[in-house]
Length: 265
Picture 1 (cartoon, rainbow, N blue to C red):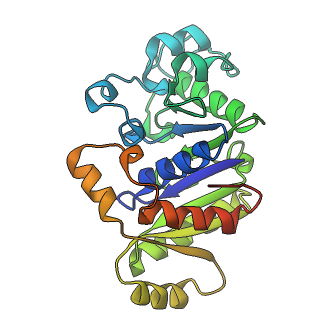
Picture 2 (cartoon, one colour):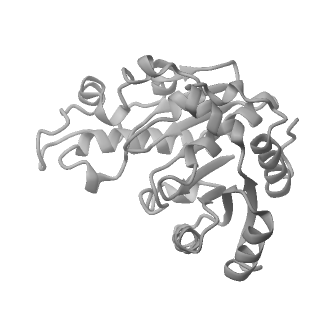
């Protein structure tokens, strides 16, 4: 199963992706998280000490690897020749981070060419790697993306089985989520679910969602969890949070509802 976790900045996208990764990996599934944000921080959320995380070089910024695999250095300019189908089948092992037998992470970096200037060889490598992982059958792949599904475009988006679009319980945030879901549908992602995160007033959030989303969109409420905020304040990873905490309980309910073929414990 291939899952895209999208949404505008600040909604808790990375927290949701990391919690899903813990739930699924601890339920016995092989899970690989791919961080494709231009400011990647999934590593810290999953448990890499911040002093080590700052040393991680995203694939799109790894000049040595890009040149080795594509035959061209990032930033050499447009019009150069480079391999469009570089070797990528060993990248997850060589450049990934293992948290447990079932849970790994690869920091890919942004794949949005419009934001990368002349890094065309790097984008080619990253997109080829993503295509390889999204067509692999043996793992659940969770992609923590930049805002919007459109960065994947044709040729990648259709590999996703499911998009979780993370929103906040506000009119503006829900409106953005609706637009992202429509983009995802246009890109052939058939199952799209809006997760309304950090809900403090359940009745108010339900009324708003019923009014704005109604039955046209699939949605779930993810209640505010003070344990997540406390972990952020103390610089602790999500793995230290009790599995009986609100965010874990809510996301297990989502998994059981939206992917009933997956058994979570």
